[in-house]
Length: 147
Image (cartoon, rainbow, N blue to C red; front, side):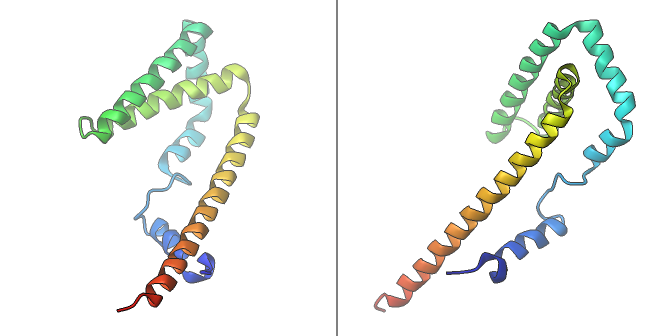
C-alpha cells in the first residue's frame, strides 16, 4: 500500500497550493477585507435589515442563491463569465452575513464551518488513500500481465 503522506502525493498538492497553482481560500483578500471592515459592514448589513425587513431579506437571499446557481450553470456551459459568478457569490455572501446577524449565530456558524472543513479533509484523505490503494493494485496487476 502506498503511504500518501510519504509518497509525496499530498506534498505535491500542498506545494501546488503554496505556489499558487491551486487557489486557496485561507488568508485570501476577501477574508482580510471582511475582517478589516467588519464594524462598517455590520452597520450597513443591519441598516439593510432595518430598511427592508427580515422577510424581504430572507426572500432576497433565496433570489440571490438562485441567481448564483444560474450563473454557475451557465459558466459550466461557457455561457457566462467568472466575473458574473464572482458577483453572484458576493451577493449571496452578503445575504448570508445578514442571516448570521439576524439569527445571532456567528459562533454556531464558525463551529459548524470548522467541523465541516475538518470532515471534508478527512473524506478527501480517505479518497486519496483509496485511490493510492487502487493505483498500487493496478500497478501490481500490470506487472503480472504477460508481455
